[in-house]
Every structure is written in structure tokens, then in C-alpha cells.
Length: 329
Image 1 (tube, helix red, strand yellow):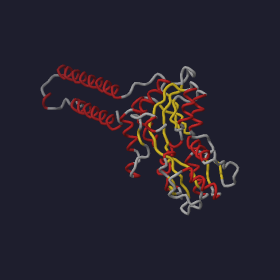
Image 2 (cartoon, one colour; image 1 turned 30 degrees about the horizontal axis):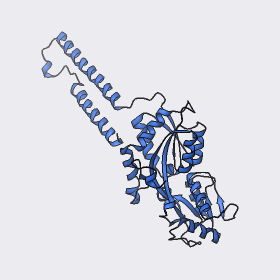
Image 3 (cartoon, rainbow, N blue to C red; image 1 turned 180 degrees about the horizontal axis):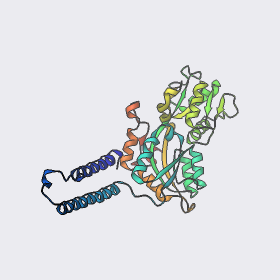
Image 4 (cartoon, one colour; image 1 turned 90 degrees about the horizontal axis):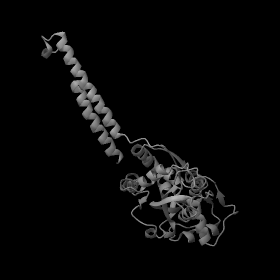
């Protein structure tokens, strides 16, 4: 149930109960209809009146308990997720909705996808939301996860200063853009944190048959996407980022999208439940509830609409009705 429908249902029930209470709330012995009655008769009427109120209160308790989700046996859920879902603001919408509908309390740890999967490998998270498909497959093959569902995608873009010293603007190949940056010795910021974005960047350098490590213009932050983007802006440097993080925070950067649209820049997100057979303390029931919530049609609709009003385009595209093969993975 979506937040709006939950709230509407709850409020309509509350209004009905309020009307009932207001109807029977005041017992006034001075009203004309009670004139001429003796005290015994008034006491009987008052007792009947109080029984009605108690019945209404019991009904109110029943309605409220029906509206509220049952409290899970283990209500705490640890979500390890890539920073882009946090920095873009998507989780600020989805997590409260999930908590309201499910009764779980989510502890979100926003790190790179590599670190998120490491948390899963060590049993320090219950569920993962990550975007490093090849590493995810290895994670599953090693028996660290139980379920893996396709959730959504967006894309990576190469951003940089408006003056574009490497002359990459309009390039249709991300690999060729990386070659131009390398040859120009233009400042480039790398996260260097084994995140999904960092893995994609390294794959592009590998495809270009180039290794920028150790170059003075190649600066490693070891931080998340948001912080790395700010540094790139301050240094007028190039950086690979996901489109959602860029668009949702672009007023904070002096950076422009220079290269986009290459199929190699596809950015795919999956939700993974941690293997409770390997880590018995993992909250598998809660993890599966979150995974099912992420691929539920109602949630997928929210994902597809997120960002449209503000940016004129969605920041993520829902994919629960697709397969990895449909996306070319």
C-alpha cells in the first residue's frame, strides 16, 4: 500500500470514530429530554451512555490496530547500499515508506558497492542495494547471498569543467574520452573505494589499455560520490559519476555533462539478501520483505517517477519486470 492510500485509509477511519465519539461524548442532565426524571432513571441512562462510549473506544482500538502493521519479530534491518541511492535522495523517499508499511526500522549504511558486499560477506548487513553486476555474481557464487533481484538502472556520465581541456565534449565513446583525458594529462578524480562507480571507471581504463595510477593528475579520494564530485568541482577536474547524483546535486558543482549515452555506461542496480544459512543472525525475513518491496509494482512506479517533476526526467528507470539479459548483462 502506498503512503497516500495508507494515510487516506487511516484518516477515514479516524474521522468515522470521531463522529461516533462526538455523537455520544456529552451526557448533559440539564437537557429538556431529561426533565422530570428521577435520579435512579438518570443513573440508568448515564450507565447506558458510558457503555456506548466504552464500545466505541474498543472499536477505535480495533481500527487502529488494523491500520498499523504487525511488529516483526526482529524489527531491525541493516541495509548496506551504494552512495548514489542515498546522495540522489531516492532512499529518503523509499525507506520511510517501507518502514511505514512493514513495521521494520531500517539502518542504512551508504558505502561503495564493494564495501557493501564486504559487509554482506562478513554478516554485517541483512540486505544489499548495489550496482556492480560482475562483483554481485561472484558474491552470489561464493554463497554469500540467497536472493538477487533486478531493481532499476540509470547511467554513468563523464562530467568536467566547461572549458573541457581534454576536448571530450560530444564524444560518443567513453573509452575514447578516457584516452583523450590521459593524453592531455587533464585532472581526473577517482573515488578509489572499490565502489560500483570505481569498478566501472577501472573497466573503462582497462578497455582503453591505459593505467593512470601514479600520474600526478590522477587524484584518489577514497570517498563517496557526493564528496568526490565536490572535489572534482573545486579542482576543475573530470570525473565519472552516476547521472542521478549529478542531477540531484548539480547546483553544488561547477561541472557539466560532457560524455553520455555510450552503452558501456549503463548502471544497473540489484537488491540482494544476505545468506542466513551462512550468517544465522542475519535478518532474512526482513531482508526478503525489503527486496520484495523494491520490486513491487507500486514501488517501481515511485522509482520511475522520482526526479521527473524536478529534473524533467527520472533519475532511475524501474526494471523489476525485466531480466539481466534484457539489459545486456
